[in-house]
Image 1: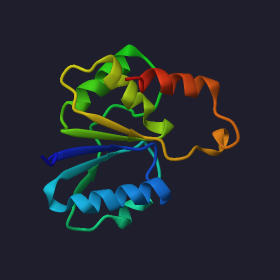
Image 2: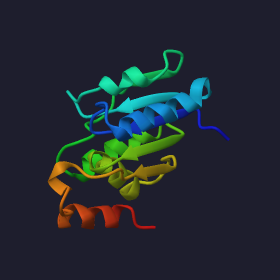
Image 3: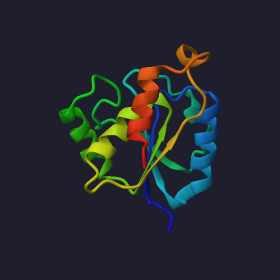
Length: 141
């Protein structure tokens, strides 16, 4: 079964490796699905040019903040937003709050697939212990 409404969660959508691979995936779905790209406010979105014009895609404008201070109320709001979709795809550290929201408030949320695709410069030589522990906790199971 092909999901009809897919949420793609990135901290930004600048033309890098994971963003261009995401565009390829979105193009492969073609007209079979609609896609919502959810990025941080003010984030770069230039990789959207790689998505074919006939694909139904939009940037989330009614979503809670994808980044910010962790809080149960913020995570609850994110989990409620996820309920609009059939599948959620998250990418790298910038989308871990979406993973946390689904982990803490799973009722009614769709399947989620998280992708770790390299690390930002702040973790290029050594993983952050705090981030790594958070990843392990939220991605357990």
